[in-house]
Image (cartoon, rainbow, N blue to C red; front, side, top):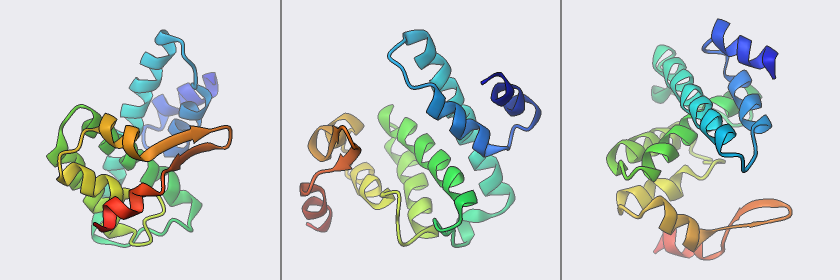
Length: 149
């Protein structure tokens, strides 16, 4: 963990380090939640810097390339943070950009894009359409019906 923390200080745009830290800090401890939130913000900021520098929002970003996944996740995470604060327009802009760069939409940006466009709260979206089990986090079947409706 120390190595990764130092790496994010020396190489602020090295996104895989942020993703690994995010995976390692998975706890109910409030102090660690604060640290995780800080690193999620740094991950998002690094992802946006790279997206802007490389003009990625004007290109296609394939999920098939592992290098793109941490970048896409970082931007999605940041958009989700803004959405959870009720900043629907900015979150919608980010979700729309993600969707337009990756039409296959492996991360599900289209759902968040519609929800933020309708100004549905992050909490309401999760209550209606997300569930967790021992295998992970999943979308409920009702989500597709709502999206297409």
